[in-house]
Image 1: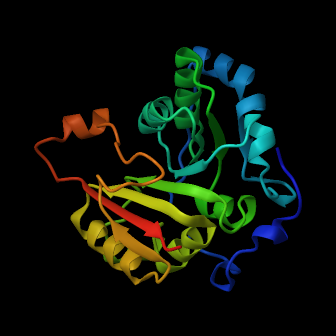
Image 2: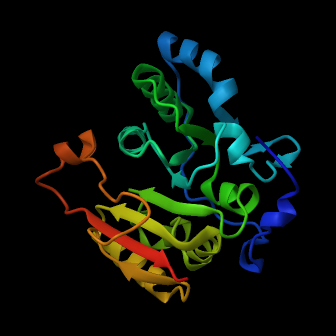
Length: 242
């Protein structure tokens, strides 16, 4: 599932330095059933973005999935509610779901097992690490970033995932016609994402309902249903120019 050298997908110069991570650390524990599922399925369906020797090398998705298909990278899949539903709706697309927290990945593994879904693979680690080292330029049909941590305090804005350098990296990894789909329920972060995406010269804004190579029909999560009276969700879409 890994092939070649990470040099083939070398990051833009803007990422060749230490960066502030966009996630909080936390301890998580698994239930007995989750642990059993993890031990059975993780060796086949999961991998880590880093080990003691450093970042993982370039990913051979054809080998990992056992077929050649368009690849969508979802950064921050959480418990995988959207991941699972969207993968089931698009069986001809392969999804690589990235998450830092083991419990979220374990919940997604349980869903994959329960629903017999075959077109999802999981990576535990930092999404920017995955973009930098595991995918080459023009290799992704889509990148999904749903409800990234907004880091609402001004002094923490530098921790937001969707900064100009990261959006530039996403644009590089998308193939021509590929799609960046972001969603947030934080109005301030929505404005920030919109400005950053619109400023990236390789991306052009598109809308839900446009003819695109991947679905933008994102299911409503349990979190959203509980918060229907709260903030509106903003969906933001860009396509990489040919």
